[in-house]
Image (cartoon, rainbow, N blue to C red):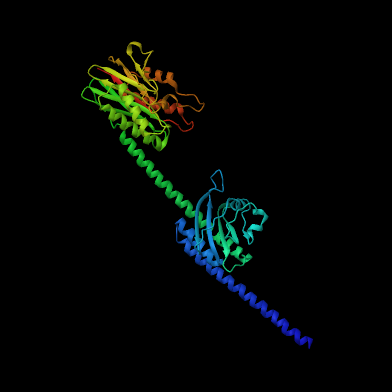
Length: 440
C-alpha cells in the first residue's frame, strides 16, 4: 500500500518537473524570439531617439512594467552623471519617472543590475526622495567596452507584485544587446552635428574672406599691400582699404577681442561701422569717436576692438590718423631709417567707454617713406622657448628689405613670423600686415 502511494507521488513530481522544464524552455524560446525582433527593430535605424524609444517600449512589454526611461550620461563632463540625453516611454498618463542622481551614481560606480522592490526601505538609497507613485524598479547599465554609457530603468510591475530575478536577467540582456547600437547612433549623431558645424565654419570663413579686400588699390605714386592669416578657420583681425574720393583713401587695421566665430562676427560689425563712418567725410578722430559709440550700442561690455585708422590724401601726401589702442604703426624714412616714427595719437580701444574723446594727428609722407601697420599676432608670435618675435626683429626685417615691393615685404614679414614660431604650439593670434610705400 505504501509502495503504491509512493509511485504516484514520484510520477507526480516528475510530471511537475517536466512541466517546469517545458515552461522554462517556452520562456527561453519567447525571450529569444523577443530579442531577435528587438535586434531587427533597432538595427534598422540610426536615429538615436527612435532607437531608445523602441528599446524602452519593448522592455516594458517584455517584463510588464508601467514606465521606462533610458538615461545617457556624458563621460566627458566634469560631473560624469550629468544627463546628456533623456528619452522616456510610459503606458500611463502619470508624470514620467526619471532616475535620480544618487541612483545614477550607484550605477556608475557598480555597473551592475539593480532591483528595488521596496525602494524606500533600502538603506543604500535612504536619502532619495522617491516619487509617491514609484513602487518598484529595475535599473540596468548600458556598457560599451567596460565604460558606462547610460542606464535603462523600468518602474512598477503591472500586476502589483515586485520584479523577479528573471525580469532583471532579461532587462540586463536587453541592455547588453542595445548598448552598442545606442552608442553607435549617438556617435553618428555627434558626427553629423560636427559636420554641420564644420560647414557653418567653412561658410563663415568664406563670408569673412569675402569681406576683406581682394586686391590692393592701384594709386599713382604709391605701392600698397595687405594680407591676413587666421590662426583658426575664422579670425578676429580686420584690415581694409576704402576709397573716399579721387584723392583720398581710408586704410585701417584692427583686432577684435575673442577667437573663432564670435570674433569674426564682431569683425564684420566693426567693418560695417568703419565703412559707414568713413563715408560721412569725418576726420580720423571723429570716425573713431562715432564708431566707438556705435559698437558700444551693438555689443556687450566684454567685446572691444583695437584699431588703427588713417585717411591718406594722395594728392597732398598727407596721412591723418587715429590709433584706438592698437599696436603703434611705424613710418620708416630713408633719411633716418634707424629711428622709425611711431603713430600713437588716438585713444583707448573701441567699445570700452561711452563718449571717449578720440584724438587724431597728421604726418606728411615723403618719397621713399614706408608705413607699416600690423597686428599683435606679428610681434607676439612665440617660438618653442616662449620668446616673442618682437618689435626689434620686425623693424630690423623692414630695414633690410626696404627695396622690396609692398606685397613682397608683406609676404616676407609673414614668412619670417611663421619661421620664428616653427613647430611651437599653434598660434593663438591672427597675423595681419599692411604696407604703404610712397614711390613717387
